[in-house]
Image: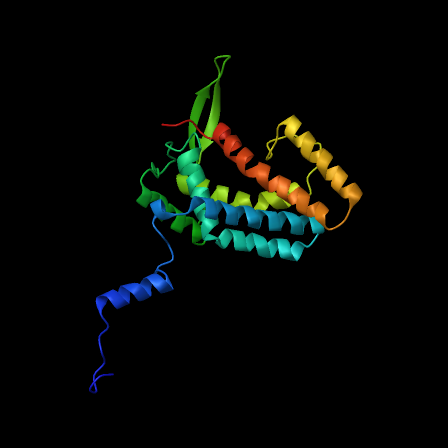
Length: 225
């Protein structure tokens, strides 16, 4: 106080304090997101879920899965997957909505972090087959597709830790050669035992799953508009 009155700090001092203490709103703009850091946070959390599931610690698995569903990084990475990387990113559902602009993607990321509502109906389209027949395809709305991607990051590591090693379906690193290599490494790690075995398997799973999930999702996504 100066002379019985509160002193008003200079504008430059206020701005400097805001920079030092960080922005008041932690949600940065879409174009300002550090994607490498966001994907690293998601990958590390997937590794922790995988390791807890491998160890049989179901209580910790559920806790980490809830943390993943609340994660801002998971929401951002999931929205980026369905709006920028998937082949069907320009295909709308029954609501006719797509997320093309940065503002739309930012709103979508905030939307999927809120408690989920009832899923919307899918839009039914028919894809011509080579034999002349039509194959039905259901296209969810963009918000439901983003929620599915976010939930997949929470559920996939748990199931992969307990999956059959010789199953080659729609899984991360699902091609036969890659899955066979991971299975061989997993068997060797279990034979050696020790605390490093689950870490090795977890690291292999997370490294291959992010790349494989992106390519698999693009292959299975609805065609672009």
